[in-house]
Image 1 (cartoon, rainbow, N blue to C red):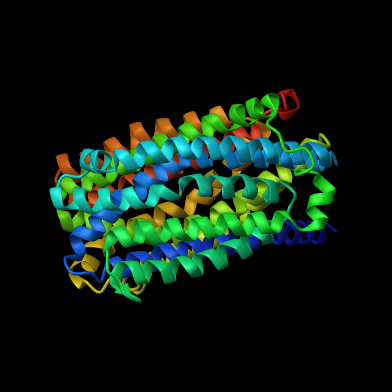
Image 2: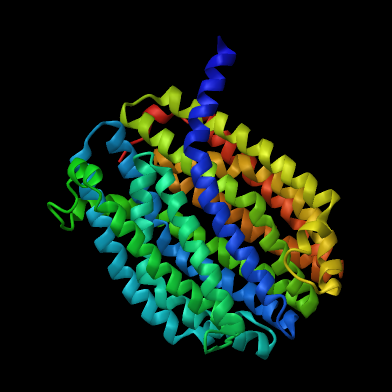
Length: 450
């Protein structure tokens, strides 16, 4: 009986998680193909090092605001669980208006200061120039990206993760085409190198916003949630979105600044080490993106359960989801440890950089096994409103364990790239532990649900 119950729960979790994983995996594939395109340019070590800075800087700034999806997702999931469909529409309207305004402002600032941002994190001037080009073009699409963020939160909250999957597959396919043409040149367009990757992604993001707008016009959604019938900004809803999202935003920005610092630390070792670290981070997406997919499912399931105040069921879904995600990270970890070159050869044909990256990927492969527990259960805590705890846990461990240990082992003790990456397992295991304890022993019935 219990076995059948668990099997049924796993099917339910997978029904939500797999489309999200598919969508995130398509994004991962684009990132890997993008890295592979850039890795085959002349002077690939400079482009890859610049790409590492550019991509992580993009993640840092975008994540500061894309976490609005978390607030939207959590509020929608709770109201959908309570069958308050009109309120779901009001949340979506407020989120779209809020996101677009923020996107316009931030896009203008980052495009203007893109080269200054790149110069702050790059040691080599050529690396800084290429990274600045990438940021300049990539951030032109931020307003449209944040519109898609609001729509994602809405469709995640009502359990329609397949919409995200369809969007991701379509738009990322276009992204690959745009990037190839703009990186190498074609159809009468001169190749732009790494800058072409940024511009191609911006064009694809605009297409993504159009896709979500088209889906939202489908009568079954429009008539049920009435979001276009009364399109307006609601201050109280915006305040709730900010309350949930702000700690997540700060967490994302601080963590990615931490990873940027790590990339900079590997640059102190040498340029090859910095380029190899970019390859390792790209490879880790094989594992991390599916974990985020399970996290999306957990936020929906926990949020729906909280909508009817079923705290036992909410915790149950969190633990079962973390088990499924951990099984996946074990499989990927074994691949990283035992056949790392098969992964790295997908990203670059520079065998010198591959050999530098191999031992670092093996260390990362071991450490990321435990990341599933932390990521999935952290999403569950965010759904219940404990976003501040999650933020403090990850930021403190990243800044005071991961980054200092990386510098100490990699640079100070001169253990090189392997020494720097050996800090990752300490960070990941401690993070999983503090999140598990809070999720397992927290008294959710005492928490104030927004």
